[in-house]
Length: 425
Image (tube, rainbow, N blue to C red):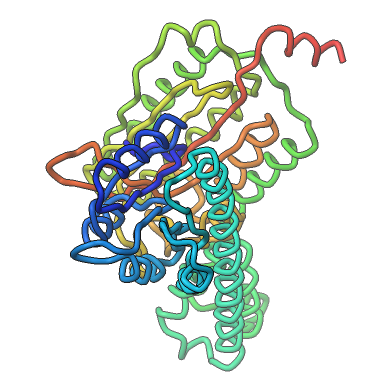
């Protein structure tokens, strides 16, 4: 499985010995370094396993550095590109920088200078990615606002009998509203303007009534979730010192309890092995809320996984944190997106955001982002973090690289002294 924590560098150099030395040095400094002999090989390796940083020579056979740079700059988020050169001619260097190159590295390479520049390059890449995601989020929000505005205009201008089934389907599956409060308010507005009074009773369209009741159920679930979030935000909850072994056992119990949900699409959950060290490591969290988080993440992974696929749960300690990752295969949604599109990584945690239409009413969670919002509030209230990202799985050699989605929560591992100091404070 590809380690997202790895900082990947692709070195492109037609001279094997200096290229391999550079790769070995960067690997010794903790980077995940790969090596290509020319631009064509570099393109193949980059397409299979993208790198955040590319260090390339210019004069190479098959495909030179200029053509490679042009190709790399066509990606949604291009890598940070360095060019290695043995020439100090200012005009040449200026010409290189105009190609969308981050910096140049003079040969022979000063390894200390290289290390400093590469470290800064990863910071630049992260800033570039954050900026691009932010811009995408703005566009997505604007598109959703316009979509709902157009929908409201249709409601105002059309008669209930002329709407047909499609308008109710739109209310149920509208991209940015979903089922719940937004569509419930709109449905009530439609009912108010179309109901016919007959004596002491009002007659409303049967299809409209069904839609109202469906959204009412969803709204009731949402209210309960809001109540849980209010308790979390205001601190009205207990925390416990819990061993990692106990947390692991909780996940085992949850998997058993949701067996009836797994059968909906014949999913199978695989949990990583339990380690002996888990007995002596602890986190601080409320057990009930922790269970809610795990259930939500597992349900979410099942909703968007193809039938008969396996869902992996990795439970591990890394550094000073406990990391629990849920990894699932993905299928294209109704808009043709596979996985988490660029710009959606943060939006999926917003209460009424939906990445796709209603998936399966038989799942026991809301079909928009409110459940993940609750999970985020719970984890962050215990000084942890949660994220959903696309990853590339290289574990199956025959099938090759495969896109998957990983939802990971991180909780700080603490000791008895930390717990006691909090209680005494």
